Length: 332
Ligand code: ADP
Ligand code: MG
Image 1 (cartoon, rainbow, N blue to C red):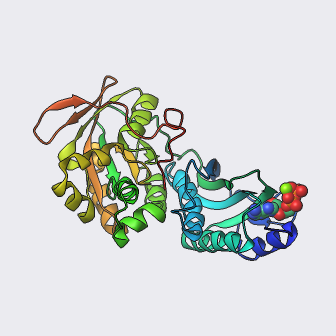
Image 2: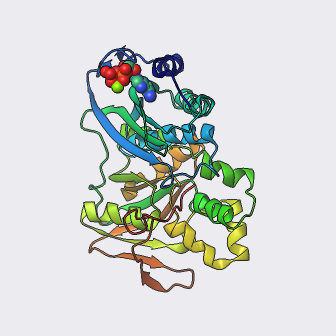
């Protein structure tokens, strides 16, 4: 049980870091940040709720702290911006021990360092019976350069970073009681935000529309095409697979579906002009991050998947929908 809220905040403060934009951080009624001339401010919030987003039986708290930062940094990257600071709302249940908060903060602080961001404030409160985390992130992008979901045009290529389905494959294995390879464990419990890629795509103006993959390719692509008023055609054989994922699919071909509907990959999905293919190849080499062209944007409103057999099928709405399956704890 935690007794001293102020001691706890003092400990959090020591791990908060700082940045050139920070005038006032933790300790006053508000934080005060300077927005550098020539930049716009991006802000986003994510809730992480016990029994909905994570299960404390499976989840290491330090990994959860790390992930809480990464998923927020990912949202800023998805707009072509650079994350700068975070705010942490903590709702702590009675049974929670101070050592558990420390473990969470260890991962949180490590991720702050990894992504070059700082903790500018938050709120701490007792919660009824489950751990509640609310993380807000703020980031910067050059004025007028942010990449929304709505700019894709027919004829654009559709690209994705990294590999697909790893996190969902890990979850499927956890549920089946199968131990994870270190690669799959990392993809699931300590996802990596594509911070450098997002910022570079924004700075170089290389993406016409973008989002990060949190709900699965099928569902998230639907958001992008709806917002842009276009359709898309993707090729199954182009979907990028990790070695671990490909090995699992060789054993059980139906698992390929996880590359389409599996959530929490935190890769970036973006549309880009055909004329920028060489620029994107160069960026991929510079960042040492695979970028794969998985299809194209078309007119209309449908998403068509070309299967390995060359059959075209319309992609049903997939991905994780909280309100469709709110009682199902499906995420690690
Ligand atoms: P207030 O009563 O104004 O909400 P608090 O006593 O809750 O102030 O918080 C004091 C300071 O500590 C504020 O600057 C707030 O941003 C910061 N703070 C509180 N909880 C957290 C937290 N979990 N993470 C980071 N900063 C926090
Ligand atoms: Mg407060």
